[in-house]
Image (tube, rainbow, N blue to C red; front, side):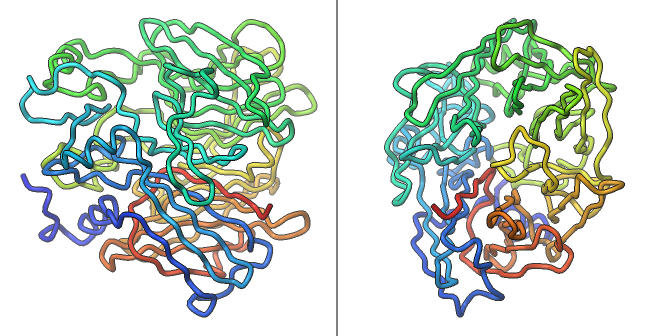
Length: 490
């Protein structure tokens, strides 16, 4: 089947156009007069960064979005109220090879170069496309990817400097795409995973000069999936996320007739767990039982209460299996946005672990299916009031998202507000931007309208989300991103 989308229903066509948009390098200046509303004064001088797959329709094949080439965007809020936009492909080795060949050359987690299995044999070097996260650290931006070192970018021009192993510290290691700054200690926390019959975990913290400050290691029994983690003063927190191989699918993958993503499944026979590693002192790993089977992809925060209890906010699936992410069903079919709706809905939980306990309790914070949970990054490992995320207005489903949600964690009943985009317009990861002490926080989100072929940046008051945007900026259509970061005025 062709990936042609003109005959698809509106929603599916909008999704395909938005996911596969490929505008290439951009340098735009949007004057203040063209901004609908006003960019808040407290945000001026700052910028939103985002990263995601910017080239997925490669030659005659559609790559799984997990395997699309990294495309980083900078939305700078100028002091005069205008917005400057810059976008660049991350020029990884894989990108350079495939740009020259104008076809898929390297195997990925979920994408093969050819329909002929013998042309796919062997995985070779990892397909590091640097397409997942973006964070400012020191004199560079770091674009993360699941399974290899991040790529360093010039913070102003966005030009690619190359893979960054922190002076060999993580050379050759499968390092998680998510890296976390501890603003209070001025450290960057990295997590590397060695997969196999058992799973090796290594947390490293580097200081502002990239010097290794501390390392913590653990060996977990069985295969474990990790994409994100949380941290508190005392603990690193991972989802237990047990995996099992599908032997026949794995054998097919090894001879080029399938993909690695098709070869693993979530082991729902095992209980839900969080894994806690001591952060500042040597000590045993704690495995804390959750009330139901779980699969955790993203965390929002973790902090200790005065009574020693650890509180973790995380997005949880109770029933999950790999495949059909973003509606992907193969290199010759259009993306189907209804496919993710067939699996269980992701829920946002507050998990409480009493000091020394082996079991946790939890509460669902809102009835909606939430992902991409964010707090003010400067509040990591501290109790905070506001949490934002992406969700669907229809509480039966999660992605693709059409709404931004803001939750008041200090209010009775966890009061929340929702803002929903127009019909067939999709919402990316919202980012909470602080304007400083005493100033209201704002939520910045990117809307993707495949039918109108445009992207819109919106700014909303976090404490008045339902009133709609205080500022919106219309832009050329850019592909839906995965993750972003807010960089406040220096």
